[in-house]
Each structure stands twice: as C-alpha cells, then as structure tokens.
Amino acid sequence: MASTTEVPYKKIEKICCIGAGYVGGPTCAVIAYKSPHIKVTIVDLNQARIDAWNSDDLPIYEPGLDEIVKASRGRNLFFSTDVESAINEADLIFVSVNTPTKKSGMGKGFAADLGYVESATRSIANLATSSKIVVEKSTVPCRTAQSMRRILDANGKPGVKFDLLSNPEFLAEGTAIKDLLNPDRVLIGSLDTPSGRSAASSLVDVYANWVNRKQIITTNLWSSELSKLVANALLAQRISSINAISAICEATGADVDEVAYACGLDTRIGPKFLKASVGFGGSCFQKDILNLVYLSESLHLPEVATYWKQVVDMNEYQKSRFTKRIISSLFNTLSGKRIALFGFAFKKDTGDTRESASISLCQYFRQERATVALYDPKVEETQIWLDLTETAPQDNLETIKKQVIIAADPYEAAKNADAIVVATEWDMFKDTNLDYEKLYSLMNKPAFIFDGRLILDRPKLEKIGFKVEVIGKASHDIGYE
Ligand code: UDX
Ligand code: UDX
Image: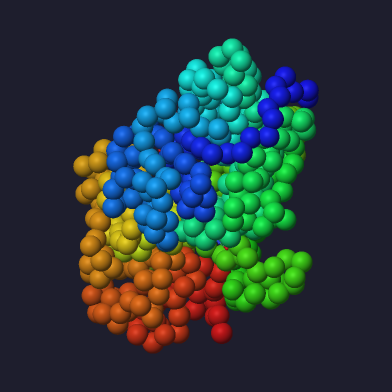
C-alpha cells in the first residue's frame, strides 16, 4: 500500500503510553529505566490506577517492577491522567489499552472488542497538534492497523501526519521484567514505505538502548500483528497437547512428567510449555486463539477455525475432567464437604486472575454444593468476589459468600476440609515450604490432596496419610508404580 505520509527519521525524545495496565505499565517503565534520555509518560483514564502507580503500592505485582519504577519515576517516568498533554508532547505513542473478547453482538465470545483501541486512536487524532508515530502495543486482530490509520487520517488536524507501527508485546506475567530486560526478540511491523521504514527505525533505536540489534526484527505490519496471535496459539497448543496426553497417562499408568521430559529432550520439540496442568489461564491465550478462530471463519477457512478452537475446547475439558476426578474420589459427592482451594491467580508470581482455572474450579465446586475455602498469597479479596460474581451472574454476592470463604493462610483454609486442591503453582504450596503434617492434622479423614500443578512429592505426602491424586498420574487403584 502506498503511503500518503512522509515522516523523516525522528529521534525519539518523548514517549506517551495510553493504558497503564499489565502491558503498558511494565513495558514503558522498562523503556524509561533503560533510556534515561527519553521522557516516558504513561496515561490512563482510571485515576485510581494512576494514583497507585504514583504510590508505594503499585497496582500490579511483578517481581522486580518496584525497583524499576522507583529508579525512574519522577526522573523520566511519569504517570498521569492528563492524556492531552502527554499525547501532544510525545514523538511516539504506544496504544496499550485492553482488547477483551466481545461479550455481545457479532463475533460475541470470539472477536476482540476494539472499542478501547478505537477510542484511544480517536483521542490521538483529535488531540495531536504535531506528527506522531503511533504504535499498536495491544494484541489486536490482523489488519487493525489499517482501521487505526483510517481513523487517524480522517480525523487528524491539517498538516499532522501519522505513521503506524505494530510492536506486539511477548512478556509473560510473573516474569515481565526479566522478559522485558532480556527479550527473545522485539518485533516491529511497519508499512513497506520510506516513511513506514523510517518510523520503524526510530522505534528500533529506542529498544537498541538495551536490546541487541540482531534480536530486533522488522516485518510488514500484518505479519507482526499475526505473529503475536500465532505465538500465543502455538504456546497454548503445546499445553493442550500435553494435557490431552495427561488423560491417557491417568488411564494407563504412564507419568505425564516423564513423558514430557522424554519428549522435550528432542531438541526439535524442546522442554518448555509442556507442563501438564489443570488448564491454562491468563488474559491472552484463550482470547488470542478465539481471535484466530474468528479471523479464520471470517476468511472462510472453517477447517482452520476448527483446528485452533480445539485447543480451547481441550482446556475446558481439562478443568471439568479434573473436577470429575475430585468428585469421584470424594465418594461421588461434594455436598456439604469443604474444599481447600490453594491458589486463585492464573499462574504463580502474579496477582492476576484473568481466565484463571481456579475460577472455573470454584464454580464447579459450588454447583456440587461444596464449601470452598480458598487461599492465594497475592490476589486481592475484592478481585476474588468480582471474578466469582461475574462468572455466576445468576447468584448474588450474598449467595456466593455462603459457599466461599477467603482464608488468611493455607492452614485456615485446610481446617476441617476434606480435600486440598492445588490450582496455582505458588512455591509456598510446595511440600518443602508448607507443613503438610500440620495440614493433615487439621483436616477431615480420609484427607485428600489433588495436585493440579504437579508440584508435590506424592510418596512423601502419602507417608503422612494423605490420599494423593495428581494430574497426569494414575490413581492408586490403577497402580502408578
Ligand atoms: C494488554 C493488551 O493491551 C491486550 O491487548 C493484551 O491482549 C493483554 O494485555 P492489559 O495491559 O493487560 O492489556 O490490560 P489492562 O491491564 O486492562 O490495562 C489497560 C488499561 O488501559 C486500563 O488501565 C484502562 O483503564 C486503560 N484504558 C482503557 C485507557 O486508559 N483508555 C481507554 O480508552 C481504555
Ligand atoms: C502468555 C505468553 O507466554 C506471552 O508471551 C504473551 O505475551 C502473553 O501470554 P502469560 O499468559 O502471562 O503469557 O503467562 P504464561 O507463562 O504463558 O502462562 C499462561 C498459562 O499457561 C498459565 O495459566 C500457566 O500456568 C499455563 N502453563 C504454562 C501451563 O499450564 N503449562 C506450561 O507448561 C506453561
């Protein structure tokens, strides 16, 4: 596509990031930390979130984030709700607003809701009084950049030019700072025009402040947008694949950890993302695959859509399969029983609960009329109530609170419980860190443990007296030895 705009190479001195969330906050904090000569302003419509970023109690928990923010805040890193000033002074603007799955209308349940991206783009068009490089940071469906360009071109002030780049973020929560400081690659997509390439090289130079240039790759816009969806789909596909195998392991006596280890030693396969679990969660995997499914359907590729949809279906199956195993072990009823649910975050080292398997487990247990006593070291109580009310709209909070207790520690959760269910792999839940003898003494007998994360030493716990059931490992009655 021919460019209608020409932007000569611009050295970036001021950056604005719209959206102080899990992606925009840490990413731009690291840019500021590593580029003291660049002024970085992160803006958000949510005043409470900005206040938190300006306080000692950051709105996001990420190992290492506090230090990075404290080192740069007030020097060249600023958090503000003054969107207009930040847009106006910036040379380059990251759009890092959320793109949730649509809850209604066409594409409901699959397509990304681009309402926030559109409104952020319109704000840039309406407010900017000088030319800007606009960067898609949010994960978006392929060709969103084209819509953004149209909005910018149609609404911008006379003489103001915009260049659009795609720069998807590959950080994983819990290791965000590590990933940002030492990324496998940085991907920048641009139009293949002089002005597109010039804008890309301006952003390359920002990352080159700390990333080896060989790891900063440039592609066309559409490849960049699609690569983000594909990377997440491929990662999630590996988890669903090993989770499918975990069902075979449970039925045959094979051990899923051993199978994953044996397969992962093949350098063509590799060991990562082969850890069987109760199911993947997080804001990205499910959303991005559903996005890919929707894209495939829109392109009249139903076989491709069905192929990827299966990755999400397998994930749902894994959660209900694990629940069924719990019910059948507990003598086919959970009614009146207390389940201690260990972990509510979607993975360890984050307070994020989006699409967490724990939410589904908790609702399944409630439907079986169990009492759930849950404990998570990082997730806020208000977030737990929000997740449980949102996913069970037919029940009000009072009803939910009759069945769910948030415990102050794992021991309180386990008191008078019939079973412990490990749903998040927090290190503190390992048998080397918790006193399982004490937990056992507090519980009803027989005391069960269901390890949905393969983090516990089964023989050790069985010695204490627990009945232990592990994802991807056969029950005793089948014989796992
Ligand atoms: C990110 C990506 O942007 C998303 O596309 C990806 O798939 C998941 O991660 P994330 O940073 O996790 O989203 O979202 P969130 O933590 O919800 O933060 C988005 C922020 O943007 C919120 O703080 C919200 O208040 C803000 N926002 C939203 C604006 O400032 N302006 C808007 O118009 C809309
Ligand atoms: C993911 C991608 O890894 C990241 O590159 C992208 O930018 C955003 O989406 P995130 O969702 O933060 O990151 O975490 P990730 O570590 O990928 O874990 C996702 C889910 O998969 C978690 O619930 C995790 O527990 C689960 N998982 C991961 C497994 O069940 N088994 C594994 O082997 C790996």
